[in-house]
Image (cartoon, rainbow, N blue to C red; front, side, top):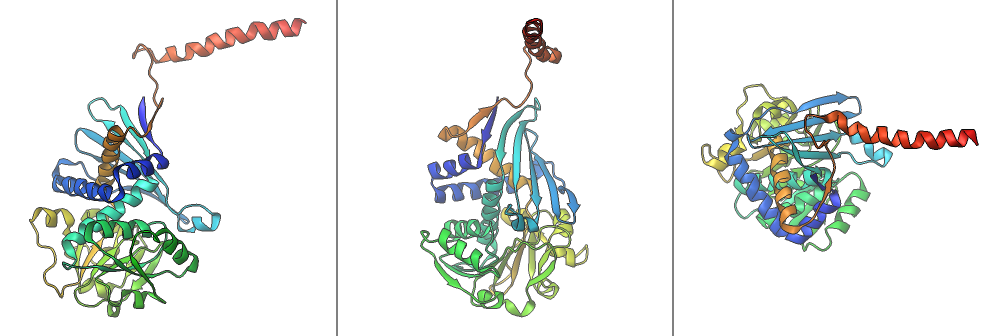
Length: 355
């Protein structure tokens, strides 16, 4: 039997643990896994692109546990009353190959993305950063706000979205979190005066959400929305005058904001900042960018944490996911009950025909 966690189970785990404690624990687990980066087998994700979106597989293994995530990105889904992103993931025991967990990753991905953004900002934003601009108020926006509140103490949000309904939704969801929310008329005014600027738009196109003249010295940019080839949010000129940090350079050069730059443009991987091998922010006046596209190790981290918390809280269920014959060398034996059932049905059918 395999442990199964639905989105409702994951929400219940967060409630049982407590939201702030959950965020802090997730950030701590992410930090630990980034610090043992070399223990993981890593590769850029497999992506199957189509005119409407992309379907991706994201694997990672530390030699003891294997994880993968199936995830899509279809910006036009909202017109069909469907989510832009849905996902599920699994863990397996490397020693046996047997799966141990299967879980929703739609909610879990939103949680790990917010936590990874906050982890990066804790090391790259100026100390005391409390005001954040949120540009794009789709499904990920509340998770970013909550993660930054829990980890950095952000308490003031300057928000903008082209869709007024998205703004209403965001304000409604964040009403009980004690944060000051300032509605802005455009991205320029949202970024003005913000210590941290988070861009998280959904359109799959080369876009310029932030131009070079919108960002003051000393700001930290959390660029989350540009996460596949042909999809960006930041002006090239802004990239050229900023310090850029990434999760996994080989993947980000294909999918992130830096797809606009040459293949050898200098970037720093977040793990090197966390370990102290490379410096983070050069000065208070530097502009730092976390060019985040999401990486499989982050999925590994949250799947493992959810597995552990499921055991701690008793939340979750079991599913009969894989074939388990009594004799592991006799898989065909699983068909025998079907044969027996047919033998029982056949005499009844014959009797009915004779009658």
